[in-house]
Length: 168
Image 1 (cartoon, rainbow, N blue to C red):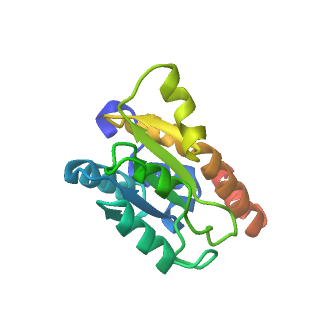
Image 2 (image 1 turned 135 degrees about the horizontal axis):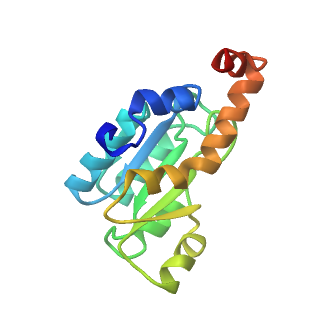
Image 3 (image 1 turned 45 degrees about the horizontal axis):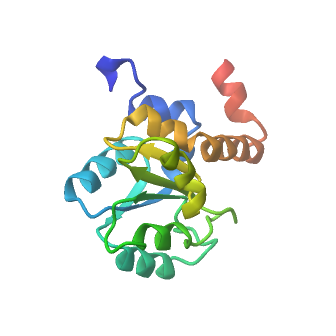
C-alpha cells in the first residue's frame, strides 16, 4: 500500500481512532486465494478475521457468536459465487448483531457487471457490493458508513479526547 499512496494498516488505524482494531470480520468465500487475500488485507487494517469456505460453516459460526456479544461479527464479506445456488443469499440474510447492538455490515463480492449487479446487494440483503478482484480502496469505501458510525461512537465515549489529541 505505501508505495501506491494508500493508507497502511497503522496509518488507517490512526485515521479511524483505532476503531477497526475492535472489529471482527467473517469472510465467506469458496476460493482459498480470495479468503487469504481478504484475510491479509483486513488483518493489516487491524481487523480480527475468521475465514470459512461455505455457507454452512458461516451459519455455524454466526450461531456460535451471540448477537451483541464482544466477539459478534461487525463485518460479513460474502463471495456471491458461493455454491450451491442461494448460499450467498443465505449468509447475507443472517448474522448476529454487533457488540454495540447494530447489524453487521454485509458486503457482497461479485464478478458480475451492469445494472443487474447494481441491484444485487439489496436483492440479497447486503449493504454494499464490491467487484472482484477486490481493490482495497473500493473495499474501504464499502466500509465507510459503518466505519463512520464507529468513529463517532468512539469519539463520544471518550468525550472527544481523541479528536483533541489529533489536533494538537
